[in-house]
Length: 258
Ligand SMILES: NC(=O)c1ccc[n+]([C@@H]2O[C@H](COP(=O)([O-])OP(=O)(O)OC[C@H]3O[C@@H](n4cnc5c(N)ncnc54)[C@H](OP(=O)(O)O)[C@@H]3O)[C@@H](O)[C@H]2O)c1
Image (cartoon, rainbow, N blue to C red):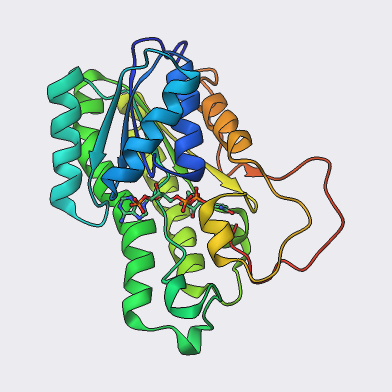
């Protein structure tokens, strides 16, 4: 894309962390942005936060669950009713598991309940699938679009001990993005992903048991997503790993997400 002015973007997970920072960055560039999350209260607060920097921004708050196919259909319907198009889809909604049940400590695979497995896979992998299925027809009809999936450096490339479901979901997401990128390229739809290292968000704060030495700021991830969307039309960034710079000393990271 050359410019985001008057474009229409959907950001799942737009009420917190990386998704919120991305919604703010897109709105500051002139995009109309639909923020998707389950909590209406968090979405309300997120809209206020975006408007602090993007005054007069055109925003929509959609309290919907990415795990539900019907909800993602509703998401696309409402955005199209309101703005008539979908140019950008950023899949940032994510779950690291039921941390409340473990007082913030991640689970070993041997202790992982099928329920927690389902929650993480359904959110991080199936939820992206539902979202893509919902927005792709509108992009195909218009003959173009930008998709960015928020993956994970450690989750997608290596595997995080004690975060088996999370790692499985992000490995799966990497495969999904790779396939889709080829499938929809002929429709002018570019599918890219970003693989952030550990980022200072509510998810990280809720799940970490050992603090890493260096953290990304969600704004750094958002700025990278913006660059992916605005990258030259004839270029594709596959699996860019985003890490803090300069690198900090090696600290214990095994049990953190990222
Ligand atoms: N933080 C890190 O270190 C890190 C590193 C690499 C990758 N990531 C990835 O970055 C993405 C964003 O994570 P974050 O750290 O920014 O987390 P976060 O601050 O906890 O935000 C998660 C967002 O996802 C939404 N969400 C969760 N489940 C949902 C569902 N079922 N339906 C709709 N929305 C849902 C949340 O809103 P509601 O709860 O209101 O639904 C919230 O807006 C995730 O995919 C995560 O895996 C994070």
